Length: 80
Image (cartoon, rainbow, N blue to C red; front, side, top):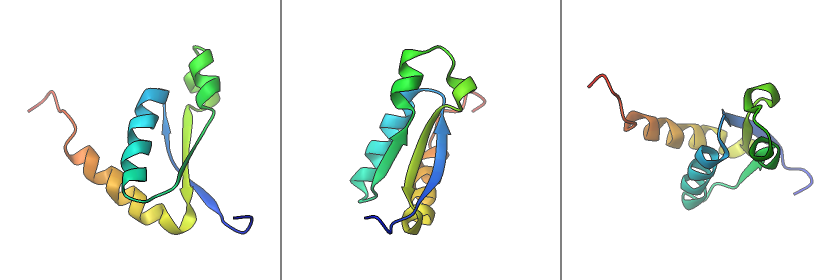
């Protein structure tokens, strides 16, 4: 694991949102690490710290990005 590289996949304002997406990616076999989750949960300054950061292995980046992109296709849209 020392030689593995990780890439920032997404940033989230709320840790609850990051946790939901993390669960989806992990159910697809992608290892996910969240950074600054506790910091964001304990302060009111999510944007100041750049939100909760979601990292995946660099080799899984494309697959993870595709999975999250597919989820966004089904997001609620108030304009419809």
